[in-house]
Image 1 (tube, helix red, strand yellow):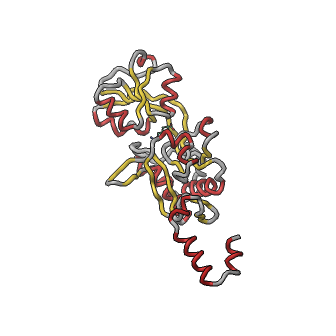
Image 2 (cartoon, helix red, strand yellow):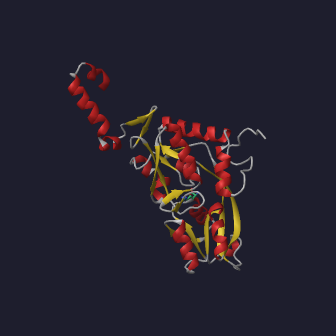
Image 3 (cartoon, rainbow, N blue to C red):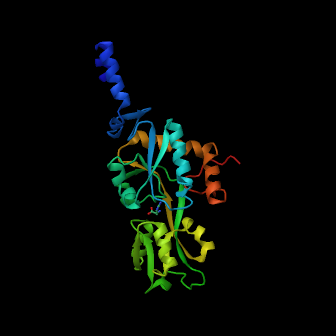
Length: 273
Ligand code: ARG
């Protein structure tokens, strides 16, 4: 529409309108930007909300957020031909759809487990990582099962599947806003054990903790976009498919996890030796 009107305007007026359309940083926030049919909250950038510290998926290093999730969304940004911008936000707003609905970001990438409840509020990509829950305890602790946790205080991360799991198993929980605070509380003895995704507990084993138990929950991580944003969802799934096929996913996985992915890791790619 705008283009058709421009055609009949004097050149100088048209030029002014064009400049206004291109230059306004504020315009971008209203969802005007478009990259190959994909609308982005800020022109020229893929804005991603994430909740570090959650090593190896998202954590800060030299003032920058890095990790497996970040490397994957960088591939999405590259395929769209835009810059990747990461925004650190509480996990609660990431998993509730609030960050997406308020245009705080285009994509949520935060080790998010695809659940039925969340699917009502977020559109998820194809799964890209398999996860289970784990129990982190002080070295030498005898806590190693649900039963052993009876009468103990278990730290969980707020609004996560670990919190749901602990509550469903009748455990007495204390909530923490992020993994860092949860681990801090375990260090100071405020909690007896911490439940979170098993893959993020490993880095603490060398710090006087051990894995007390692995609770097999069969979770899968997905990237999230605003409900109904099929153009962006298709782009994200397209990138996931590409990086599965060209080996980029295996490289990213191996770099951050330390071993090559098992062929069963979320959506297996056709084996090519
Ligand atoms: N996978 C769990 C969930 O979806 C925990 C994710 C927490 N992620 C994070 N970056 N803090 O609830």
